Amino acid sequence: MVSKIIFKQIKFININNQQFKSFIIKKGLFVFPAGPALATIKKSNEYYKSLKKADFVFFDSGFFVLLLRVFKNINVQKFSGFKFLGMFFAYLKNNKKKKIFCIDPNINFSKSNYKYIKNLGINNLYNYCAPRYNLKSLSDLNLLKNIKKFKPDYIIVNIGGGVQEVLGLYIKKNLKFKTSILCTGAAISFFTKDQAPINNLVDKYYLGWLIRLIFNPIIFFKKYIIGLRLIPMVIFDKIKILKKDKIY
Image (cartoon, rainbow, N blue to C red; front, side, top):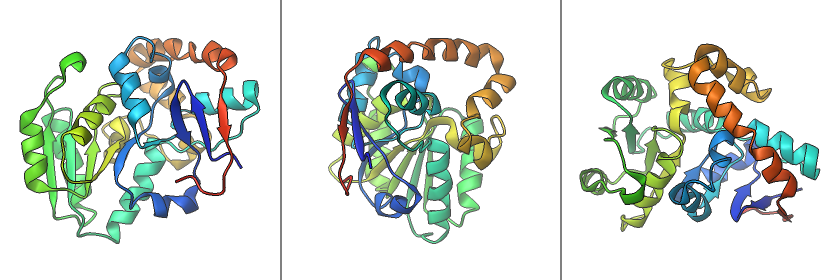
């Protein structure tokens, strides 16, 4: 069984549902790069660096998983941010004393996210509205101050891909205590119903892209065109395969 692959110096891990339980208790930076974002790593050094330095990189992109299967004969399991969050929320229902810190894109999403997680039975919850960040000089001392004061078990970064990973690495570097930083982006909005209605069946059969395209064609059509750049990247890149019983 393939446990890890190294693509463009990024270490992707291949896990299944049973391994989730041992993963969710780990500390570090968790990232779920989407296909269009992966296709732009050459244009964003900050984003690329954050993926290479992340502790756990998951196969969020069904398109990437299919390309590996077709062109490299590498079989890995898609483990999207949506799937991860669904299992994480189920975990929180049985671990209600955990302290959760959410980083949200605006006040409206923050209210929705707060309400959803609160309904899981979590009382130790803090929501922070992120400002617009400059990736080349990302800094947010107010955010760090609030995190250090709250000392969360989990930080859920709910802002856009390409930015959240850079922010996640910034947070990790500037904290003296260890925590789990989950860069799942907009995935929480599928649970709060603030975005397109994606469910487990849609995610299982790699149809999330289609639902998003139907509900927001202007934004996602452009993104998916950019994502096609992944095809030659996968075809011509040498991908290292690691096969071990354990993946951590």
